[in-house]
Length: 400
Image (spheres, rainbow, N blue to C red):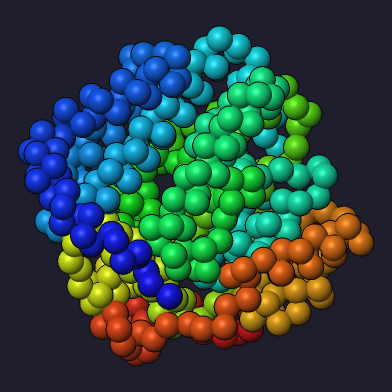
């Protein structure tokens, strides 16, 4: 299956002059998308000017990408618009009703682990019980109160469905490697302003160094405010969050959610690297006219091993009763045996309803991966991966 549709390259070529004009003046593009975000949010940018200016700087980084494609530029600028609209709307809703800030976000469950380690399986099953809740894809596009007008809700869901369909049209393989729909749980990284997720599309020199110095506590405070808005008008639920990228921010996450339960899935990094680099190549192929697969391997070996190192340091401060380690191999080989045990560790009840939901989740496309990709395509070999991850590889083998 093709990474990107056959018509993408001709479109990028035809629109190259328009792209050249846009990147010469990224501020013009930024002012245009900011105006749309302000209109959609119903409030001006001054309610959160520092955040807005951070995103202006981020758009400038995108504009400087050497082999940037037209579709890469339009897709990322549209996402920045969506993220700014959400941010401004959330700021407005909190300002209009201070009671939202008192909404309890207690004992959230946070699913972490290297990418491609069954975090999606765990996330979807744990989010399903009636007392639990995960943010849905459409809510990341249009965050609002739970009791928002039902007709407006349906229009927003319909718009999110169109976006999801467009993604699958442009990148046909995406539906297989990361299936999602407008009304299913999605990674909460979509509500975090900054992070390594931008590197799945572009090579951004200096950005990871910037991230290493960035204070992520305000980012996670915003994630909490996002959840409080979604909960406003509903009864409190136990939130279930998920992203591999939480690993390098666990310390910040735990400052904002001090009673969080952490579920960490573990898998052999050699297998992870091949699979993850293939996924990153899909995003890179969409957003760049040319790219080097070896650079993908080098950058992400460095980033993922750093993530694990940071996560292992942060977990030292988590009480054992709130830390659940899960073997990818055990979970995928025996999900009906492993998930009831995981539920018990998280203080949840396993019932026939949960077993039925697990059966439904396993039947979805992409849940059972029959093919993993080789390291060699990305300039990597098993020895290099083992060196980068150090004794983590032995830890994974020990719990397998």
